[in-house]
Length: 124
Length: 124
Length: 124
Length: 124
Image (cartoon, rainbow over all chains, first blue to last red; front, side, top):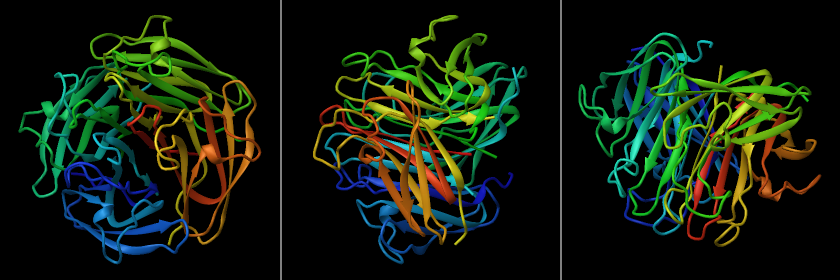
């Protein structure tokens, strides 16, 4: 299989929805980064989070094995610190090997309603 | 008409919603790949599916006739094996002629609610 | 202002939702092409529609004046023929001057629910 | 950190949803531009708004500090004039330093329902 993608990806529109309604974890509101590594090498992806009123935080380590996909909920990241809920942020991912990154939001702030939004991240 | 597109396309954020609510097939939850072939040659598109914890599966054959569009629900693919429901995956499409690929999700896990998400696939 | 964009744009994932619920026209289901012409020349955009099982139809004339945006509901096109409801299609737009094209779907098939999906079109 | 992005971004599909339902400001309907500035210089972003039947309006000043993200609701812009509600528009952003721009819509026109749509803006 070919090496596909880029080594630098950006998502400016992060904002983890809060609160959530419905059974966890499938209806928990989230922002998600979906990383596909088609190469034969492990991708030690590093994530940095940018805020409106504070210095960037990172790196968050997001390793993706060779020939694997990984879907990471931003809500689940805790090291070096939790990504703040209900607050605007941007994400920058760097990978030593080419990967492809997509962004997905699930919003369940209203009972009995699911809203989705998706976009490919921006490759640099 | 011009030849338009690329021969390699990637969607990292696959996850077929499950279960579904509402009349089938129009309200069945799905992930969909929409492939447009504007060329005058048949596009014998091949799809590979990447998982989080298993080797990639494929090729799935997705032929698209000359000057035709084809919308394929991932749920409907069974050869070489069904794409697994409610599980993260990524998709890689290869075509011998240029095509354009878009991704669409329809989520009907909650009764009386439809959620949609769409993005152009990433061209390599 | 600069000339921005491309002269060829593609949307593979067309499918006008049917039926609709709610007051017309604001809650009528639609697929929409949003074309921005930042140049100082009129853009005589031409649209062709591709189907799964029939030859492409077009051109549909979609002129966009200099320094203007135009949002066109595919449902409203009737010349050379109406775009078929509830049926997969793809769209190809050609412009003599650079423009930028975005795709938006509004789905109101279920009473009391709106679903949206958006993506930038693919520039060739 | 690297300089990432482009200096010219376009969103053709603007249309601020109106009216809104639910508590303000979190459920107010909006169109939003999300701008990430990873550089070490302040980005004095300028926005121009294009309409269907009037000359473009701008510039709107949207400064984004170094290493910061900024999410701007189009509804909140008032200088040089308010962006018109419930009316098609397109947006063009220019920045003296590279930035990345994403578009997000939240639609709460129906009580008890949230619809989202997102796409990366088009980089020129």
